[in-house]
Length: 198
Image (cartoon, rainbow, N blue to C red):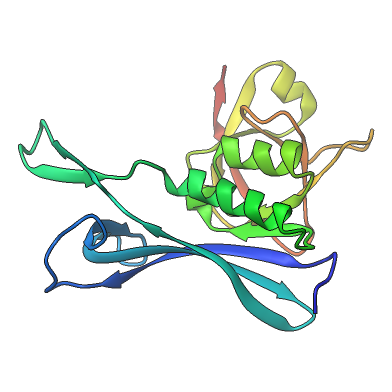
C-alpha cells in the first residue's frame, strides 16, 4: 500500500468535554470549525493516504500545562509548551525517520506558517498543498518581489509546487525563499488594489 506518491494529511480536532473538570489535557482550545473556544481534548492527527487506502500514522494530544493570568481579562488561562506547528514538524520528522514514503503534505491554513513551508521544502525536500490565510502577502512576479511589492492574498485553497527552473513563477510568498506555481485545478485571487510595498 505504501507509495512514493503518498500523501500525509494533517488536521486537528477538539473532542468537546463540556462537563469534565479542567486540567492539562481537558482544557479550553480554539475550535476553528465553530470559531470559538470549547472545553475538551485537542488532537493533532496525521493520516497517510496512498493507493486508495488511508491509515492513521501519528497523533499528538495537545496539552496545556502552563498556567498564566491574562492581563486584559484578569482570568487564568493555559498554554502549551509546544505549539501545534512544532508538533507537526516533529511528526513529519518521525515519519521521515520511520522511512515512510510520501510526496505531499496537506494541511489547512493553521499550518501554513513560514517555518513549516521552509521545513517541508528545505529539510524534507517534499511538496505541500496548504491553504493560505487572507492576510498573507505575495509578490505576483519575481520583479515585484525584488521591488518589495506584495499583494494581499484572498483566501481559497492554493496548490504549491516548487519552481526551481527558469520558468515563469506564479508568485512568491513573503519571507519564503522558494518560488511557487499554481496548480491549474485551483483558482486564487489577489487584491492588487491594496498592494503593499516593503
